[in-house]
Image (tube, rainbow, N blue to C red; front, side, top):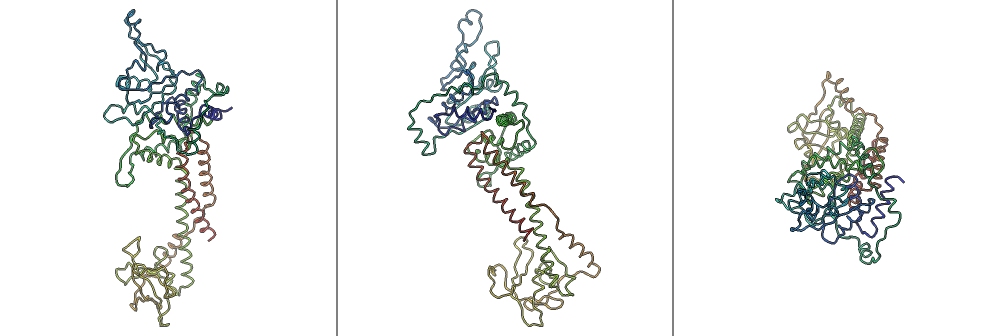
Length: 519
């Protein structure tokens, strides 16, 4: 049995009788394998202590320690009482640690923020360096996982920031949400009994030590490194929901280093020797400090998972849009040439579509070339109704459109005005006023022709292959996220919403490519 299958089976075994606590168990075990700690935030009675007890069952012959903190708690309650006999005989200040935290593999500390300064300072060293100073000697702790719990965040100004920073994984544990699951939970009367197979699945101390070494050897690939830099930069400039107020989310260098090790542990559990973007999802539970930051961090982290695919797609869409513009310009130019009279060949084409009027208003009035060529001649004694309006993308410019019929559907004459248009061999007439159009001189004709062909040159590109590659990469990430043990149900719902948007965007690009290639 490979490690991933073993971990899945182990989690299933120790998760019996726990309802909607899959995420807490999985993230807790991941933290343990990375040598880190987890804090569960939530109201009383949501099985936070039960999660800690079950995680203890993941390890063979593991010893546990539990304690509910209060403002009256002392270091003796956590680290063991002072040995009176040693104090009398050898004047040594040592604690009796048997049965207390210094000798436990899995520790659960409830109401963690009620711990006094003496306990907090000792916990800082224990969590960061895995050592405990007992008298004049240092004990190396067997601690694999510390699970802390609280129904609130650390109070400001209490000096708890350093201890808060030590908990790499931060998860908000909530009451059961699903109605059917809730009924199953309250009606369940069976006592949980682990099968004999649990002993075979449990992680031994030797395996744990070996796995930790192998986790340290997992490579962090360049894509993940780029994503981490992207997340780090985004966290420096976060906008609130209104988009007006910007703030930054501080993440210490120590925390970043530990977070990367968590990604290594995720890759290791999935049988990989290198991280990939799907491992990044767990950072949603590592980088926030305040509740208001949770959704912002989740969005930034999730976008980073798709960053490479998004970059490729944006580049392709840009190229397709450019090619579509060129294609339409070429079609318009061909139509213009087919309709053009001999004297019109020296008209200057602006922005691939327009002729400019040199003697009307400020010289910033343009008419569609194709419209100009189908205007009736003055000799026909009739005109075509047109629309003169300001360009929304460039208000300094006026545009003229000509229409075949008086009924102009979709034309808002409140934005601009109606004009009557016709032409002769040299001029455009607007409401009977003669206007000149800009033309090339004979000397400029050859250069203008060459420049026009250069602008409208269609660049060959295998767009269909590229969009399929992007779709395959996107599908690959989705599949890997679906099989990643540490992507929580909450993550999946959020990711699915983002995936739906990416899918729509890819479908639109496919349609644009089809339009480009096949019309």
